[in-house]
Image 1 (tube, rainbow, N blue to C red):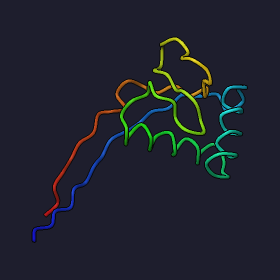
Image 2: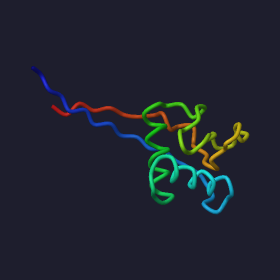
Image 3: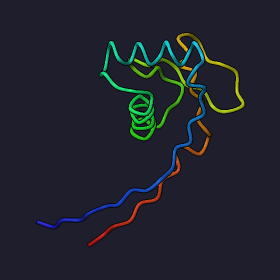
Image 4: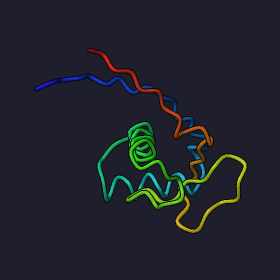
Length: 96
């Protein structure tokens, strides 16, 4: 049996106003539905969702919708979080 370790690197840039009503509502919802935590915990959750599913147009469970920076706010519930359009770019390296 062969084994390979694959290193995945990439960057996801999120824009938000932690004091906005949308962001506060998303954080409250996330704490009720997913996990107790702070804003950074929720942002890591959002980034993980975007990295795994690669689609900002779907609602993120417990958080709401995100949109691309510079585009119109999506349908409700909007999380107050915007992402740059390069979020799906990743590099893969095989470490044998």
